[in-house]
Figure 1 (cartoon, rainbow, N blue to C red):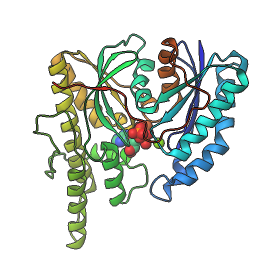
Figure 2 (cartoon, protein in one colour):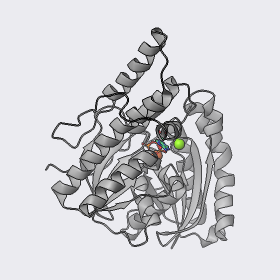
Figure 3 (cartoon, rainbow, N blue to C red):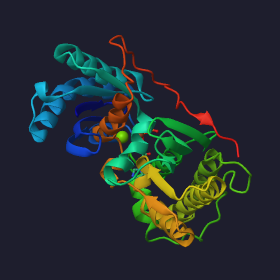
Figure 4 (tube, helix red, strand yellow):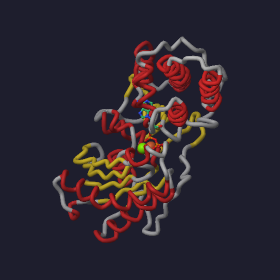
Length: 340
Ligand code: ATP
Ligand code: MG
Ligand code: FE
């Protein structure tokens, strides 16, 4: 089964052709990062306009790279949400038009489930059940993937997402959007014990997270230094902040593994590209005989391939969308709350 997928939830226009769920025939990503950089973040209206310009050429390029024609496609998949409404609408309209014109079924995918399923593309042998630590620009969650279509939520952030904290702090430090990769690079040369920043909800008995206190603490530190005209070491600030984030993520992931007994943790979302997080999680997993999975960086951030992969398992279960499908910017992550 060949699926053509559309992803346009934020500032990447991406289309992919996925065969039988796990084989990437093509994954074309047109990023708007250079466009939004000068504004210090994604401008929704500008993002929508660029999606409109890019969506058709990106789809055609994805078909070309996959060596197929429109007629070879068996189903069309699209990110329904969560994301920016105007951005999502472009993908949804394009996907509906393609499904209608080709008379093929339409599959509506939750973007966060897509991030998790990027792991299935990376590891051909990976099968549920497994735990997933999802760390992205807008979400931070610990999820049990029970089977291909059943999710349980163990915990999530009560305020900011981890990626949001990376981006805000980098911005205050004078680095362009998106800030995560800059902090990652600086942190590699800094001292993680130079400054003690608070670990939100680190000591509490919950699988929930909180990053807004940490974000404010780092920004206050930077502002105070600026006021007092004191030199700061950006590498040490980045390393100390990143350590506070990584420590709490890894600690809770380990507790979740212990509490549930699952022996596989799949890291997902844009922040999964972070080298410090990957290294620390791998070390702790190795100590406990847990298998750690993580997609290549290009599959961690937004891409069409992960949407096509997720859609395959929905299509196999007969979970198709109606032709009056609408984008949902706040599409909930439909999972049972798991209390342990
Ligand atoms: P969501 O998926 O929650 O809707 P999003 O799609 O905007 O949000 P992603 O594309 O998953 O987010 O990830 C983008 C985020 O990942 C940004 O916050 C970016 O700074 C962060 N990021 C990317 N690479 C790294 C890195 N190496 N270290 C830390 N953060 C990173
Ligand atoms: Mg993006
Ligand atoms: Fe995303």
